[in-house]
Image 1 (tube, rainbow over the protein chains, first blue to last red):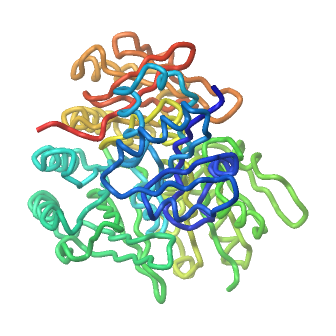
Image 2 (image 1 turned 90 degrees about the horizontal axis):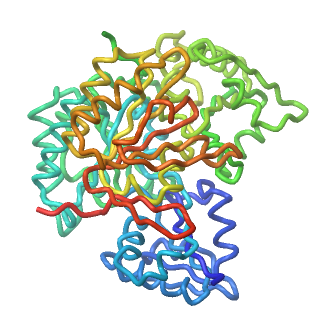
Image 3 (image 1 turned 90 degrees about the vertical axis):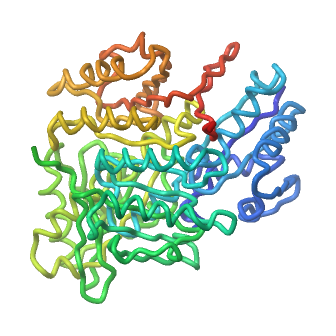
Amino acid sequence: MSGWVAIAGLGPGDEALVTPEVRAALAEATDVVGYIPYVRRVIPRAGLSLHESDNRVELERAQHALEMACAGRRVVVVSSGDPGVFAMASAVFEALEAGPPEWHELDIRVLPGVTAMLAAAARAGAPLGHDFCAINLSDNLKPWDVIARRVRLAVEADFAMAFYNPRSASRPGGFGSLLDILRETCEPERVLIFARAVSTPEEALRIVPLSEAAPEMADMRTVVLVGSSTTRIIPRTGRTALVYTPRSVRA
Amino acid sequence: MSGWVAIAGLGPGDEALVTPEVRAALAEATDVVGYIPYVRRVIPRAGLSLHESDNRVELERAQHALEMACAGRRVVVVSSGDPGVFAMASAVFEALEAGPPEWHELDIRVLPGVTAMLAAAARAGAPLGHDFCAINLSDNLKPWDVIARRVRLAVEADFAMAFYNPRSASRPGGFGSLLDILRETCEPERVLIFARAVSTPEEALRIVPLSEAAPEMADMRTVVLVGSSTTRIIPRTGRTALVYTPRSVRA
């Protein structure tokens, strides 16, 4: 059986953030599967079939990839960012575990990438420069209560925090509820960074204190970073301020 | 003033994981500064000065970089992994904030990279496929009590966890204390992944239940990943098992 699956991260958008490892896998592939906008980032060529699918069909897409690899195809499953962070890798392993025994013996690799929070943090400075957590705010796959409890504990632990998928048309309220929890548990000066579509032409970065944050500042292309209690802002003249979390915590 | 500073992530070790953006910055640089083993990953060329420094002199190194950029040099500060995750970016901003006003107006960029936990997770499957946190276990810069409290809250929040710098010659005991906390708070089957020097020739991956974990399994080149309560192992014949954390949490 010569087929394989590579679950690859395309990074946040800029081609200069795609690793050579991912480029090499795409060059060897016979098939690319993924969510429409990610597959459209792959340059078409003879001998490469592009299989686009819609959002919310992750398991079907994963099954399709595993079936093709079993039939001898060389399949790249593309995600944006890193495939292991709120992306396709877990979906592929869920499908694999529930699937026929031959899928377990497939040659399957995960190719890491620059996930959105790292690109967003880099643009702002180093807000994740000390201990931090990453939370998916979508409640499609988990109840809101779990999210709310996790956020409260993360604030208590004084993590910096990165929130993926903060807000969508079908979930307009969740991000407002998150802001309510933060207002209850953090000081009004707490630093928030709304980083939209980082490294693409639509990039927008907004740094605001919690007291000025509003739900409309986020959408599905935004990653929201929240500093810890020690996060600092360095204002600059004629340039965007720098945000960083110091490496030390005093005793 | 034409000088600049780029704080760049070289990824976990394999040159195929260095982004084209970082390559381009290195190609334009006049000076590279960093910890000895990271600077040695940069290929020497005419017109490029390499400034190696030892561990634990991060602030001095950062000051040196900022001074050179102020004098018109094009300086790349190299970190392994991502510069914003337990690496040089925060040190540079600490130095900048404490330094002379002209440093504030410098052209300074952070170039993200593939941080160690993402490379380690990719090798194991997708153990960070749901909400997770990253904790630096070094107590050089924070008291152990802060670390211990944070770990207990992270377990309570049911995050998957990534631990950087778990163990060194000067801190032999901390990682053992971490295992004690995990044994107190997690079930014995909890999945641990010891990922050493991922993507280098010395790479070693070990997947063990908490009940079999021992301090000697970690050193300074190891990232330790700890699953959440929902993390699963898919055993395979003749291949390393796959570890993943499902995307869903049931109500």
